[in-house]
Amino acid sequence: MVSAPNIADHCPVIETKNLSVSFGGHLAVSDVSCCFEEGTLTAIVGPNGAGKTTYFNLISGQLKSTSGHVFLNGEEITQYPVARRAQCGIGRAFQLTNLFPELTVQENIRLAVQSMAKTRDSFLTLWSSHTELIEKADHFLELAGLGQYAKANASTLSHGNQRKLEVAILMALEPRVYMFDEPTAGMSVDEVPIVLDLIKRVKSEGNKTILLVEHKLDVIRSLADRIVVLNNGEVVADGDPTTVMASDIVREAYLGRARQDRVGAAK
Ligand SMILES: Nc1ncnc2c1ncn2[C@@H]1O[C@H](COP(=O)(O)OP(=O)(O)OP(=O)(O)O)[C@@H](O)[C@H]1O
Image (cartoon, rainbow, N blue to C red):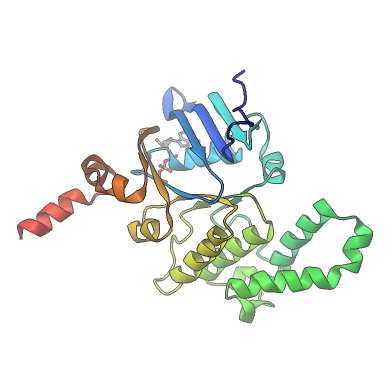
């Protein structure tokens, strides 16, 4: 067993050490060691099949690693199941699987607020603070720009509004680590800014650690403090966005830009 990082010196919020998983001999994530600090937003990028979602699954607990370790605030959580990791503060927005489609938008958020309150308070306190719970749910509802849909069933919302609701639910759960997997996928151009603003709002709290799997360069540019590039399950670049995006190998192979730029310049 690998010893936990030295908490006295410095302790990243999330750390993966030599993390690997293979599927029938295919190494989908290969020996990935990365630290993610409080107050930062890291974009995990790479071509299709690079291992981004698999790496996310290993951190949030959906998948068990073949080898390696995951730490949260210095505590080893490698063997913890998903629910325990969530209780410890890892929050992940799935592609709409977190929603209760037959409940209203307001009820969906209220459930999240309520589950947070339950972990903190007794039922007696809960009962007396019922109004406070609703007010808090409405606060997240408004933040997500979903006020007008409060009484609508979640299943009746557009895809974009369902994604917003998902982010609002995640915010209501107040995790320490936010994991977003392509949060704007399938959204119309005018819906994207609301989700980006929500993520910026989380970021502005300054004490959250945000991981984002994303393909869209403009989204990465507007949000990321750091980019980690995966290819064939391995980290091939890691650094500040300007440096990583300017790197030829990354632009050409993983972001698909260098060739386009050259073609554009030659015209
Ligand atoms: N449950 C699984 N069983 C077998 N192979 C898997 C499984 N999950 C992922 N893989 C394989 O692992 C590799 C990494 O997949 P992953 O979904 O993590 O890539 P990705 O970078 O998220 O890709 P994309 O950008 O297309 O979503 C791929 O080759 C994929 O086929």
